[in-house]
Amino acid sequence: GAGVSQSPSNKVTEKGKDVELRCDPISGHTALYWYRQRLGQGLEFLIYFQGNSAPDKSGLPSDRFSAERTGESVSTLTIQRTQQEDSAVYLCASSLDAGSGNTIYFGEGSWLTVV
Amino acid sequence: QKEVEQDPGPLSVPEGAIVSLNCTYSNSAFQYFMWYRQYSRKGPELLMYTYSSGNKEDGRFTAQVDKSSKYISLFIRDSQPSDSATYLCAMSETGGYNKLIFGAGTRLAVHP
Image (cartoon, rainbow over all chains, first blue to last red; front, top):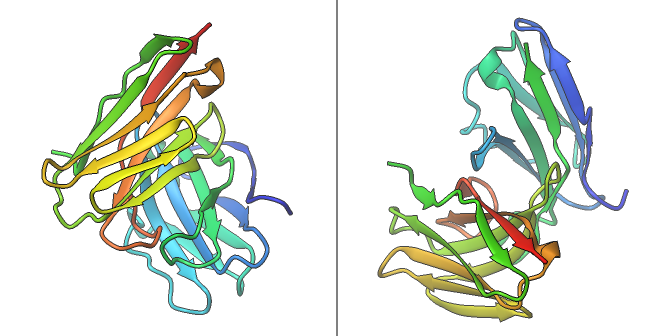
């Protein structure tokens, strides 16, 4: 597709349930990032994939969060046993690679509400 | 104290005004500085990308970095209603986009 595609765009889930968020990066982009944006706050880094290298998971807030990426394509962010503090927009982004000067493109986000 | 501080606004200006948006930071290792624009319910889009201290201009936008003061600014000349959005500063120690540290964003409203 022309841009970074995320689904679902909106998700309301009950506390304790698992959710899966999907990201389809721009074709040919080897670098993929997940960020979280809480209401009124800046973006927080979660995880980064670069090609076939081991992902940088240093931003994941707890072991309830995990992410996978299939080759250089689709990525899935999974949140297990959701809590109310997980309510946020989850933004996926991609770039040609992680080098400086390459433009990063964000998707429109998956808006998660945990009730 | 947050690593990056940004006044959340909102900032309301008349069309045609010069807008000044600012961030301060505490980590002297930051070398790469970015400004993003985010429209409501959209993902952020990269506006300006600068390295180290100095100015960078792109059309109506000018980014300034003062590393000695740990202070960065974005100026918007001849502001338009279409500039109404949230502006986020971001910075990193390396040039890549992984582990960017973002400010909370300043909401800007430009009224006709």
